[in-house]
Image: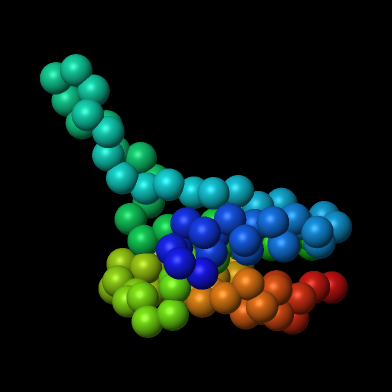
Length: 105
């Protein structure tokens, strides 16, 4: 894939074929409104957020090969995994599919 956005789109398209899986694009940042900034999202949250068919929270951090992972992303992932959810880094469509399928009931 040429960009993270392309890889995110490809992962979403492929995971959409899994019955019962719910997945959406998640943004984090700030927007300038008249006279102020509005922050949204949680620093470090995954690029793709959703629910596995069994109801477990799912967060996927999408990175192109060689793309660095920031400390706040690792910290977010540790919180998700310690709470019983599933967070992981996907650098390919196949990697995302394999990790999700490993967690299927």
